Length: 81
Image (spheres, one colour):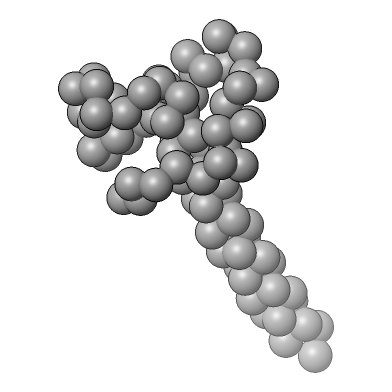
């Protein structure tokens, strides 16, 4: 897990409503909740790290979906030929 908080994500955290922040905190996984609860991270830092993790996961998911769609298109072309 990254220890340094990206300033770009800290700025995004500042724009969150308390409801949005609570929803993001509820999705934390791994060691992040423990670090937050033990006060090794501020709420803003924990939120920024979670946002960054979610952005990375979204990027990976999009790549996988694009690859699957590409494979499906190839299969469809083979069926037509």
